[in-house]
Length: 170
Figure: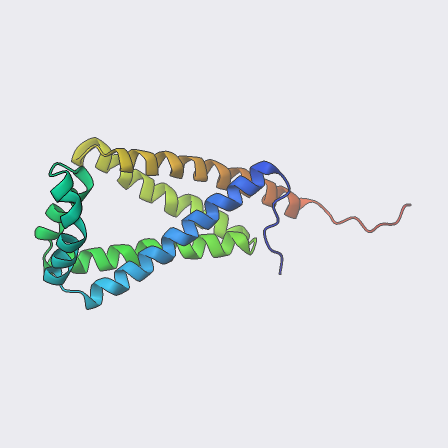
């Protein structure tokens, strides 16, 4: 079995992006698992506890208020949707990352298609739901990763099409 071996600085940047995607997939998987055991009320109490000190210092802290508002309206239906969403997203990321790191040609196509579909949702969310700097930055990062996957896919596909040299001369 062949594994991905970065040869240039560009390849190493690609590998770093893949590892970031893999790490975020693991975090999403664990977050979905944690949501199974944590009720919305407990989650809200926990977020209240960890943001309390920040809100005393700055009552208008955007992140703390966003977290509090998000958990205040977080019900059982939202919880189930979020668990399923996190697990699907994590599975897609982990399958893609592991497949590419193992240099499987199908993983490049799977990554391009699945990441492309997820990016379409992100763009839809930015344009029609709510403009978010975080979502814009994530989408820009994903565009970069898509470009890198496309580039690597071309290199791998080309290298598989080349006949292996036998080391002898005629």
